Amino acid sequence: MWHSISTSVEMEYVNLGILKSQGFTSGKIRLVYIVQYILAELIGAAIGLLLAVPLTTALGSLFQPITGLLTATDVSVLKCAGISLGIIALCGLFVILATSRVGRISPVRAISGGQAEVHFDSRLNAPIKARPLSFLIGLRQFTSRGKSYIGSVFIVALLVFFMMTISVLSERLSGEKIIEGNIDPHIVVTMSDEFEISDIERFDAEVRAIDEDAKISFGYNEYIMADGIELFCTACTPAELMYKPLEGRMPIYDNEAVLTEIASEELGKKIGDTILVGSGENAKEFIITGYYQSINDLGRTFLLTAEGLYSVSGAKPSCCIELSDDTLVDAVSNALDENLGSVIYSKTEKTERSSATEGVKKMIDSICLIIVIAVFSVSILFSIVVINMICAKAFIKERTDIGILKALGFTENGLRFQFAFRFVIVSAVGSVIGGVCSLLLTGRLL
Image 1 (cartoon, rainbow, N blue to C red):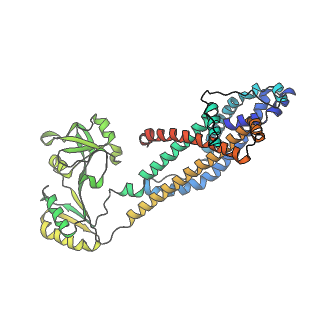
Image 2 (cartoon, one colour):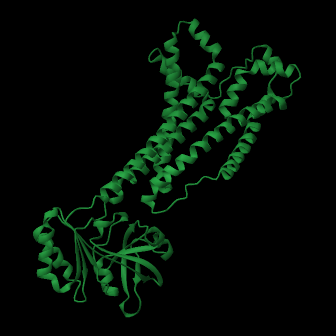
Image 3 (cartoon, one colour):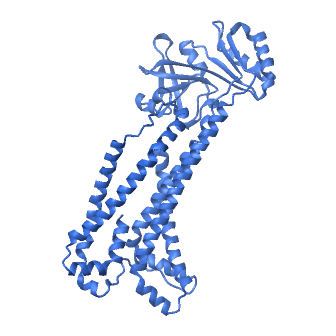
């Protein structure tokens, strides 16, 4: 809006100066701008409302299977209209501020065609040589009038930052990344009272004797005291099969633990410290080896090995087995019954892999792709609009310069290349700033 208004004032300087000489006040001229923008925003708000109704319904049903939340899909026209009016009021206030330059329009300057004094706002004048002439002139124009391009650099930096952020978000939210730790088990075993923690090795040996590539996980969940605070505890062996560390490493031994960052803050403990898990005589100290991510209990959780939790509470883990070959289910199941039947309370088998996991992966990837395409499309469209506005303003300010350069023999293509190189420089500077900001801030933001 600021670019649009400032460009419009420059373009219409002569006409606005004539209006002021005929008795039009600055207030009346500014009112014209306010009415123009409010009308445009009312039309935009109406279009936005018309699009919101079907899109909200469609997006609500799209995200419901992922989040598990039954989202309301009705749109309150009254609330949306109120929000739109609030935005329009704020924009109206901004237009009033942006049109303050109308008060500085001089009818005398309007008589001379609106030409302002030529001056440069920087001493950083780049040298000009014969080759590459267009690039060096573009660089000279950028360095000698740096203040004129601060807004453009800022816009490029913002676009690059958000485009990189959405790319990182999409990469982290890919179906493969989200589902990678999950096991789609062929066999789930619940242990009997006869189970001892040493039987974990026996289960592992029996399964791998038939299928070396099988995924075997022993796990259990329960609430337990940690340094006097009751937290949700996940036990998992091997832990790295189900979770990836954010920092440090996952627990390997029965006296190691990892915390979520939320639990770390609540307990006031960091990597290398110890926490006391359990209560009474069975309480045991665990060394914190890293941080991990979990949405269990809103992040107030920590993780031990199955052996670690067993040593504190005697909790018997369940065993989930995912085989590399569906046809081996019966062989593995029979081997477990024959050699470990005494420690098995119940056993569930399925001979076919579930397609649900692959379906969720594809759905997540599709949604991420839609988000990326939408953000990049809007960014490109916004870039085109901004470039068009900046070019229009630059042409107005440099009409005389461009005419002189053409008189000196510069071709039309050569002058266009100068403009292009100027924007290449603006884009490069803005991209570097946006990239550095993304490097420093995107991870923490997400």
